[in-house]
Image (cartoon, rainbow, N blue to C red):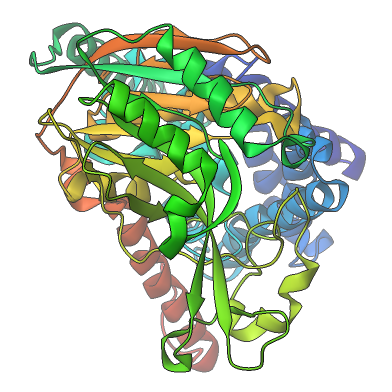
Length: 538
């Protein structure tokens, strides 16, 4: 086949994945999105004498640059450099598993297609992409069903990587079925592939639908109010913090009832850069205290930028920066979730999954001196401090134990579930998605929270500065949500749940298994290079 046609097929895979992706896509297209790329790989393998070893990497790059560009172009609205870096780097990283697969197929799996290796390599990539400092897992393939929770209820057992595995298997089985008809193989062979393809498509969907309609939440209610104050993120630091907190509390007051136990306000709701040991010196905190005096049974979770001073040099972290005008004082800046109630003893959780290039310099122990190059989205730039543990808040006048994921943290399934492993029976997400404007970005971010609800079987209250705020039940259904870019307040009664799912207990075990298997395959391959006499896998 001509190079031009191979390039067109590679591009088609990228277009199909883009057409499957939320917010505007249809997810079932993902079941055939890889097929053009698989055809390309079969063709370049059959005529491998005409292609270099890098061919698999290069052809897959075309598919993935199209997919990345068409689905995450909206990053451009917040940072031009960040958008280019995210698209280019993610394209390269996505192409590596396919490039390795092609090399293995040429030199190792000489008498088979090695699909098992391809699946393991891709799942390893997704698993690593969830856990290293250059993480950008927005396009984890299993995310494609975020808007259709009725089809992925089994994510409570596998997590989102189970969805990736399913989609890969569907593509491979459908592709082999197509080849069986093209090559006019024996009828029995075709029947076997029809049966296997039908099973891999229908069984997970059927089981999920049964689980969806038979899942019943235990009645353990708590009334929650979510506030969306609608502050333009590009101008938020030009507004007095006292004015912002006043607007938030006035909105909350509209939905308060005697049964309300929790108010959730967004990330960046309090604009003060507040020293953590001097919180009560800030008028915005005084306003929260006055509100709690009026409603003593209320608990409040809100976003704040907080600071911690280190007077003892042995205590400072690798993200700490020097305090201006001092040679021996250092401090950390945090993106913080603040919890406060009538005890008037604030608790804090500091965001731990930071946005690369915006909130942290990757591998700060190595590149810490370059942290000043981080993209400026308002406020303090450079690497922020983090918490080591995802500890939830225990509410007063309620049995609720609430985890508070901050923004970007809500796209990490295993990380999100750590709040639940630490006994959270209700989850909140506080975020500020206004940086991206009215694009698919904020919609996708909201829908990914529906996957987290299924994985952990926790109800979620989501407060977003400019939208979308909302409530999600334990099946991943949206109970309420706000419109984009309007001040709003909503209230809902959510059920608490203390049971832990298999996924919550075991995390991304599929990715871990795939990673270790990939290491074994690559080890055997390199061993064969060193010792050619070793028999090749056939």
